[in-house]
Image 1 (cartoon, rainbow, N blue to C red):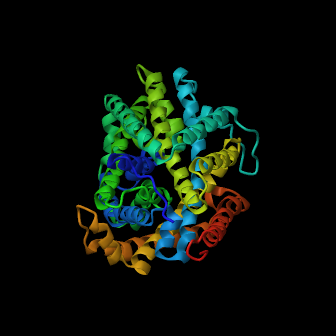
Image 2: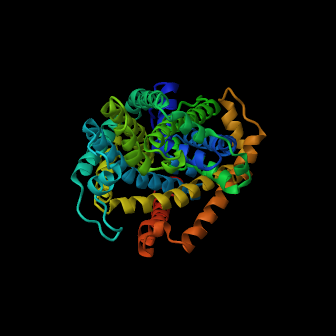
Image 3: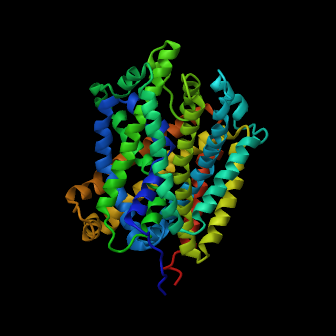
Length: 492
């Protein structure tokens, strides 16, 4: 029996949704730092090489897999080879694991929008974040109590996800018309303000000054591939789920190029907003720019609040704009990650979309309580490391093997070209069969060896086993079970 499947209302809605899932917090707090650390302007060479040899080819893979299967990641893998459906379920589980801690970061953003109105962090943004907002314990073995302001932010985040996904892909298409352009406008405001501050030019120079000698270091090229893989939301089931709602004649290659270029362009532009502000901070405190460069949560919730408090005027306004940008960047990625799991669950079980969304939001909120405890930051750090380094790389590698070697890259390329204006040639086959899997395989093996030899982050070995290796093994076992249970061809 054929199932009537909803389609995107327009190509624009799909592109915005795909871009919204790709552009996230990492584009602001990770890419500029990686660019600076790996050769500045020279890093753009391996970065765009990775985009063309890994990012865009895998975008095409996920778009065509979803469109041809008319289902989520498990159904897409199953349509190629039934025994590979476990890889699709693993993608869904990794996406859901990510969103459970990702929402806690968004909860911090909710709180900081409020704190920005009065610049509540005062002259000690680090102490405020670590000792008052998070109130961190000494390690993962001490959870402590729940931080109520963060819990309220977590509840607001999951309510927003529930409301956005309530009516399915149609409501997503309407929401992204607001939530994708809004952070771009916020970033433009912050970049203009940052570039007008004293010391801004020094910050931008540090960001872009090319060091071509770095290109001889293989780690720089691996950093470029890692950034492309993670920033495009590849291996997270999201893009396959979104593509399953495409019409049969949808253009795959153009959509992939647009998604890749918009995402990378946003990352590059974010560097101007970030480093101009860092240059201003360095000017204010009288130190070199490199002494104030941070990445990750430290940049967003310590360094940037410090910068905001030193602005000569309208500091609360720019604080609200910055954290509103983080919140809207995060919400697109968050509801996309949930939809990436909801779509295949709905397809596999026949349960109504609204019921699936309700249960996923309830379960996600319940798990997320761990991350809003005083020890939650430690667990967030551990889980994020392992799911990114092992889960997502494994899934992307499985996509290359299934498409390039089991099904056949040439046959997949023909399907892409059949409905695409821009025809892709044999370079795509080479990327999917050789370049991308070799790079991903090296990254996976290197991460495995390093993870076994050296426990991550100085955390106790038991914490790495529980929140890291144990979680990965459990996710793989559950994905294999789901693959066997919901395999449509074997269960007929």
